[in-house]
Length: 169
Image (tube, rainbow, N blue to C red):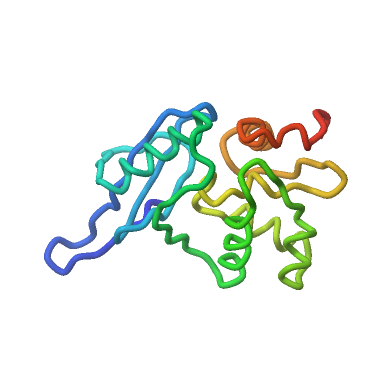
């Protein structure tokens, strides 16, 4: 669903968004009210560049080139308080490292499955690094973007963390 904003003078206006190519496929960025609200996969119709979307595109390009380890963008992901808490913990996972669903669950006093559900609802993939959350015992875990776990593995390999996950997971 495309986020929309409302104006009393123009009715409903589509949120500015753009597509960009990446090593993990075509990405789609959207912003609302001066913050990134989604990063997903696929093309966007009626692309509209804004200074923030251009900055996000440039930071993503630097990330994929191995020149950026931490994004510096205003984010406004939509989700429950619980999801927000999980996403905040994910943002603390350093580039090139992973944490398990269980470790995040213990930090929040909840179950690993609940953390996995919040990871799957992350609306700003890559920038909020849900790909850095893996299962216990070397299990890669799921991934809701592009080609699923293969995309997750590729992102971890880009960060040098792929060595942490056995090739059979």
